[in-house]
Image 1 (tube, rainbow, N blue to C red):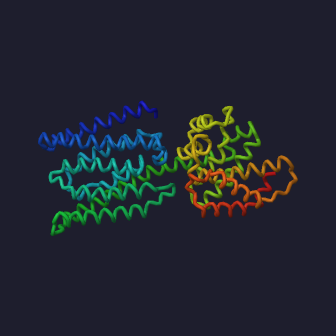
Image 2: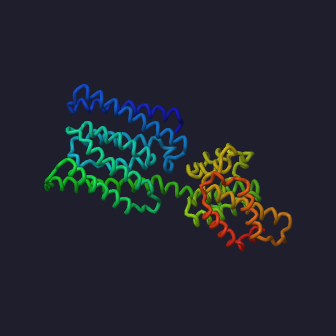
Image 3: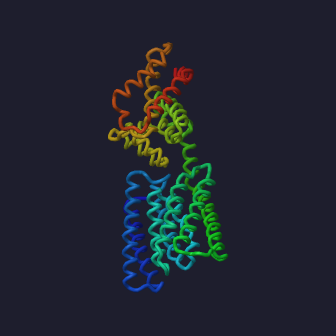
Amino acid sequence: MNKNKITLISLFLFIMTGAAAGGAAFLYGKPLTDIVRIAIMVLVSTGIVLFLNAEAREKNSLLYDNKEHFGRFARFYLVGLAASLLFPLLPVSGWAYPVIFAVMGLVSNQVVGIGTGSTFLLLSVMLEASGSYTVFFMYFISGMAAAVLFSYVDEAFRVGLPMLVSLLVLIVCIAAGYFLTGVSEITFESIFIISANILVCILLLLVFLRYYSSAVVNKQHDKYMEINDPECPILVALKQKSKAEYYQAVHTAYLSDKIAKRLKINDAATKTCGYYHKIGTLKGSNSWDAIYEVCQEFHFPPDAIALLKEYTDKESYLTSKEAIVVLFADTLVASILYLFSKDPKVQPDYTQIIEAIYQKKQESGILDKSKITMGELKEMKKLLMEEKLYYDFLR
């Protein structure tokens, strides 16, 4: 989605939120001063949320492929806005705000999700008859927990623990809310409403997470499976263009993937970077612009694009652990292939080569801005030493 379209949608969301807040305040019988106050406060909060979303998009800090799908955020934003206008018609213990916080976090990121959920919650509280800010903090805390916990859902769909913890936080917050508001007696009706709220939250979360897992998380997983296949058409084209660069990419990807899995970092994106850091040659030069053109043409996942940019763009520093892993794997493979190209029968001292690479990289200062730890560097060296038998396949 281009920037102009995103700007227009953002402007529409901003105006719609202000109009909806003011109109709802009028329908709920609020005096004029309250209508103006509600509209202004919600508009300011909405502006902050939209700014945070734009900033996250520029910094590539949105979850999964949300950067490319602002329309997804807009659709769920409108659903959340409608829910926030209707919640005041229900008892406050029946508001399903953990769902809204979790959903808005997953279609953007944790910070934007918490900000969006807080905006909707503020609107509901100001429209509700009592306007108790104990209710705000009750749902803000439980919603914040949900936004953070569910942002780590993965392709394995392991949502049991996040679901349990977020619902326990909700129950504790509701109980604390009753205590703080001076309710001395818990009635059967209140227990029924709370139970119904928890059940509704579970059902809505399961429905949304099932959709999100299949439409977003596993969609990227499938894309990684496609592009990380050595027989992928893009890599076949690279092989036809330059066999040397193709085999270097294949071996770099193999080592990068093994190291990334050992270090428990993003192995899919790391493997992709290993395969495609030379792919710009298909466009005539291995510049970042040429690589980005290929990434856009074949719809690479955002994480892979960001890593490729970090690794190949001369203006970028290598900060991520994934980039450092590719750097060491790529350097080692290139060094061994160079030796074999000079003398196919040579018997290299792989230990000496690895030690020399480590010493050179540490002395160069290229690791100074990296997030990788000394322990992880040692673990990576250990794995590279273990792969000595593999290096003979590079002949």
